[in-house]
Length: 61
Image (tube, rainbow, N blue to C red; front, side, top):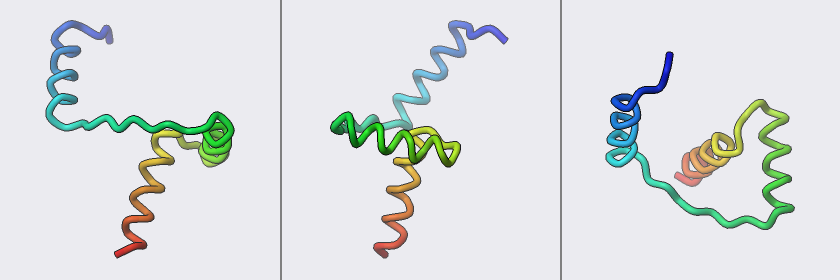
C-alpha cells in the first residue's frame, strides 16, 4: 500500500500529540555494545532502551 499524503499528515499529527523525542548521546563503543545486545535478543536499539527504562522503573518502585 503506497504511503500517501493523507497518511503522512495523520502520522505527523499523531506524533505531535503523542510522541516526545529524547536525544541521547552515547560513546560509539557503548552504542555498539547496546546494539549487539539488542540484536542478540531480536530487538531494536530503541525497543531495548524503552524496555530497559520500563523494567528499571518497575524495579525501583
